Length: 408
Ligand code: 3PG
Image (cartoon, rainbow, N blue to C red; front, top):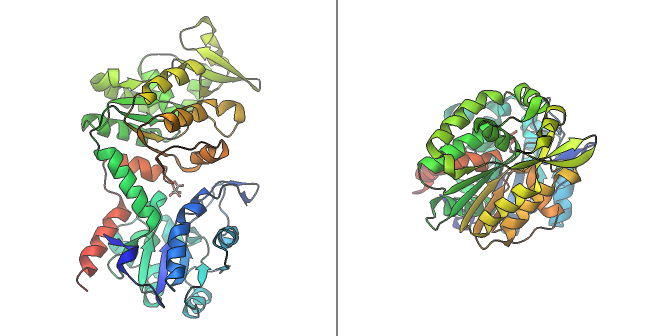
């Protein structure tokens, strides 16, 4: 696959696809983690004298956090120490004129790519190539650099559509992500512990199935809604309030699948022994086997409990490889961030080679000053897709582009 150092970008127009999709509260971006992660690539292109056209998506139509990229340009300008001009257009005349007039070392930020209908469908590379987005921009650009690891599991025009038309080059972040995740996945240093939390339960079940079946994991620790599903699959009751919530989210349908995984790999999948509930605004911990478990009927479970944290910590301290994705609870509320922070902290203190991701939840790593994790991935869904063993469309696109242009 092409690397940044394979080319000289001086006076070349580069479309740099990044993933600056960030958490937003009251219309403001609340984390600059993904901005900092792509800085080395932006600096590389600027210092090389490239004309840099940045594209990112932000959320999706009709979802929270669906805003323009004006703030993204501001935050990046600040971090980069030079102006990143926001252009309120994607591939229309306004954007194309601005791209044509760029000077070496200048940086432009296109509008939220998902404001264009073409960018919200998942289509094969051949279809993405035929979109107006690709047809209008391809004549203006010399190279595509892709640093959007967190969206590597999506097959959309800006991500894969240029692969056969222009050399598609990995950015520094992309390369770091692929190297770290591959190292964790391929390693046979044991024990290899996977921590699966968060709300992406079906993806997590796919990961569990893949890494256990291919003997890439020796132990799986579960939390968040993934933990709920496995706990039910083990035959425990999580109470009416929690079952109702899970039913609404379509999670009860996944219990049979979790049960099938347990049939094959029961001793290797650990589930929480206690949980923290929200009892009228207060964190109260309840043991799964205690007399207080009736409280689950009435109050929502928002975190794992202290006994679980301790048990998981013991296992993590002995691990050689750790892969962790997703939070253990509702980390946005401080009293329920205990599990997530406790587990991330244990990972950071263990001597294992560790990879931690989970989209927006990694913000808590920075908020609580947790250092010492070998690789903090910017990917949530993309990281999970990687460990399912399935092919990621963006990684496939790099291969196709390399085969196409390596001799030219
Ligand atoms: C993410 O944060 O997981 C990525 O930006 C991908 O976003 P998406 O799930 O909306 O495609």
